[in-house]
Length: 114
Length: 116
Image (cartoon, rainbow over all chains, first blue to last red; front, side):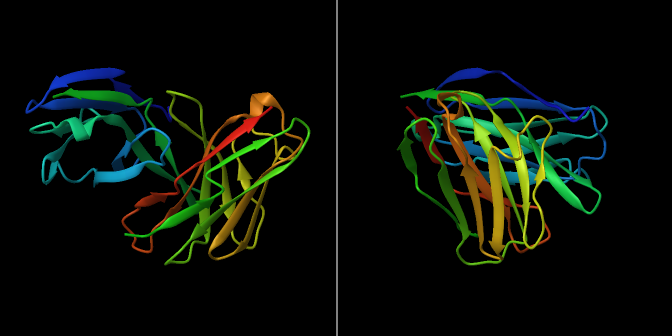
C-alpha cells in the first residue's frame, strides 16, 4: 500500500515535444508529491512538487497534474529539450509516528532526440 | 535551495574492509537525514532514517550491523559499510529535508562504492 507505481519505464520524445510521465498511489495518507530529475552518476534534484489539495502546478516548462480522486499524478515537460534527457522519479511523502519518509517510483528514463 | 554534500563521491575497497561515507548539510541544520541505496537503472531504496542524537531507524531487511549510521551533529551523518563484500557495491545517496515545512528533500551527489 506504500508503493508508488510509475510509467512508462522509458520514453523517447522528439525535441520540442511533450513528455508525459505518470504515477499512481494507493495510500491516501501521502501528503506531498515531488518529482526528481537524476542525471547519471548524480544525486536526484528536486524539479517540482505538489500538495494533494492542488490540482495543477506549473513551473516553467514543467507541470504537475494531480487527480486526487483517481490517486494519480503526472509530470508534463513541454517543449522537451535534449538537455532534459535524464531519469525522472516521482515520489510521495508519508508521515508516521512523528517522523516521515519518501517512497519513490521506479523511475522513467527520458531521452529527447535532437 | 539547501545544499547537501557527500564524500567521497566514489570509493574502491577490498572485500572485508569497512568504508565510511559522510553526508553534510552545508547551509542548514538537519535533525533527520535519509540514506538510500540505488542499483544501476533502478529506483532509490530507503535504507534508514538517521536521527541526530538518537539511533537510526532501519528499513525492513537492512542489516543494522552491516550499515552503521551515526548522526553526530546537526550537519553530519555518516554511513559505514562494515566488512564490505562485492554485493555491497552500489550507489549510496543521502538526503535531508530543508528548513521550510514544505517537505522538500535535498539530495547529496551520491557515493559510488565498488568492492573488489
